[in-house]
Image (cartoon, rainbow, N blue to C red; front, side):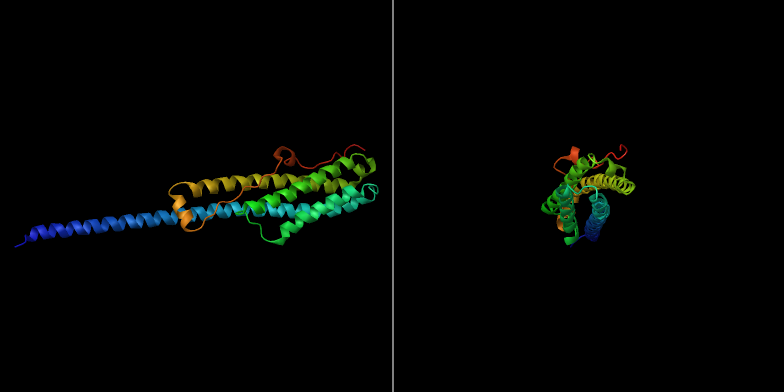
Length: 213
């Protein structure tokens, strides 16, 4: 005949094991929720950083036609330079407006960076031409527009740095263990930082010296 005390002890062990397993499952679930929420926050922060770049780029794209129109009357013999600036601006704006940017796509980000780099280089060529026209450098409207453009370029640089820092934080967070399990289960894809081919050159704002007439 079975010993009642032994059965009671066995049942206690089973219940203890049950509660232990249940507690571990709850702890794992809580950890998973915490990791999931943190990944969502860091991903949203990175995408918000990219949205700030978009805002500043739109401002840059809007300033350029006014600048070109103001300079056109002084640059009758520099139509090629003006055309290059407008074409580069239109191409960059078209890419920006065609669809929502996809930081998850390295191909899309490469095209995006290339278009903005081409625009920056066109603006640099424009600044070289401006240096040869004292009356243009002295024009108050052109001065104001160039100051606005310089300020916008600086904001783009700061926004890009903030975005890249946020992307690095998010990518590191999603790749560490046990976060990598949650990121794989719920489709947290890596984000692509925004880099240019010539960082040292592109990071400088395309300014012209309008103080010398």
